[in-house]
Amino acid sequence: MRHPVPTPRAFRSQRLIVLTLLFGVAACDVPAFEGPQIQSPPPAFFIQNEAYQNRRMFPDHEIVSHDAWVETSWGFFSGIYINGHRGVLTEGDVRAAQEAALAEAVSGVIIENVEPLTVDGHDAWGWAERLQTRELGLPWIRYRAMAPYHTISYAIDFHGGEPGLKGRPDTLRVIVASFAIGQTTWDLRLIAILGGMTLFLVAALQRRSQARATRLQGIHFVKIKKDDEKESDEGPESEVNASADAESGSATSD
Image (cartoon, rainbow, N blue to C red):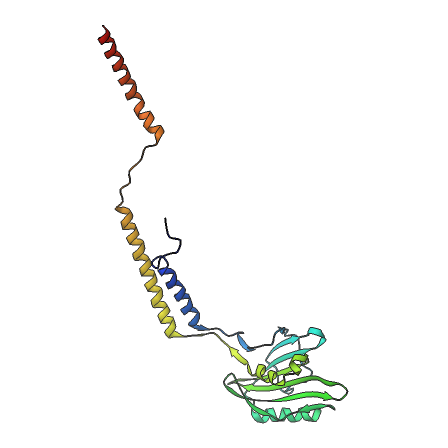
């Protein structure tokens, strides 16, 4: 009876295939989102690039790219806006934008100081805002940041109205700081290992197929006659033997 559990030899090639696939996955680093994008959006947020904020960080700078995430569950609106601007903006530009926000702030809006950040390995700057009054409580909080790259600067604006976000204001800073220009990267060393394993696997399968073909060539097949074929082959001979016996009996009786 054949054992139901495969032997190590039986699934040796399967293990090699699994390892090859694992190395293939490890050889590349795929971001959550390709291109300039928030890489860790909160749950229930979805992309809606038609959404724009009422007051941008840099209203005097042309927008060359725009993305937006929104969340509207339970009637509370939250949105993340990403605007790309040509050129390399500086910390001074961020401070000027924060001062403009202070000048335009309505009663109850609290704007904090500019602080340094690290976004996608780049120096960045941002500040927090919130609307808080005795009558309204805490309707919303906000975190704004700017991350300059070589030829473009990105302004990220996170407006949070959902109660879970308002109760954890530091979460907005963390999510804004997850911004990155997502791109798939490849590990050449692992790719070389993967290529070697693939060649080894192909060679092993070819040797296995060749050995099986050689074994099959050495097998001699014998045709086994069926019962009806045996009866048909024995039929005429039996009749001849019966006739001979009958003649022999007649001669004896005479």
